[in-house]
Length: 277
Image: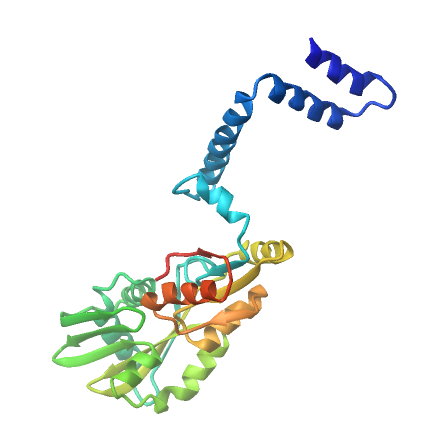
């Protein structure tokens, strides 16, 4: 009875105030039945977890909701998070050589890799009717590329950093490499028997909703960062398109966790979105 009397006072005396009436009713309920407050919190967390799951967000525990309100920095990786994660081959460049041969060799070397870029290269080669031959001595270098023996020739396909670390002169491809990177595309360089022979340019479309999400996070006062294994020019081009001002590029998969820890050591409370690959 007291509950109805309290609500009635706020609704029917003077100027009706439904909001205050609701707060008053809640106060009466809590005073009369304190256990209700204890039940309300887990119920709210369960409801929020359900809503998150419907959006593809899985929470390890309800504690995540309590921690998230203290976040100051949101870190994204690029491929498959801000981009569609479905790269496509847009060009094969082979200065002084045959572009189809370069694509065929690269696809043959990449056919055992599960990386999205490798799969895109293989799909492009098959779409062009190129036969993939046998590859042996295959080895994947996370964050760098692959190497394999194709028709008795050692083929490397990967980043400019990877080829340079293997002692390969990439200067013949530098002009094409710069052009591809400035367009926000990813370059996969190809070398055969220690010689740089060509470059594959791949594009991965930015998700339509990515820009809106970034803007909303920034409006909430969060610092947004991009951490990518891609080169600086490509990562910077994507970041600029999305309005992200802080970029860390050429970060290998095993180095991304360390990059997050470094931010935390400098006082940031960090949440990361992505698979970290």
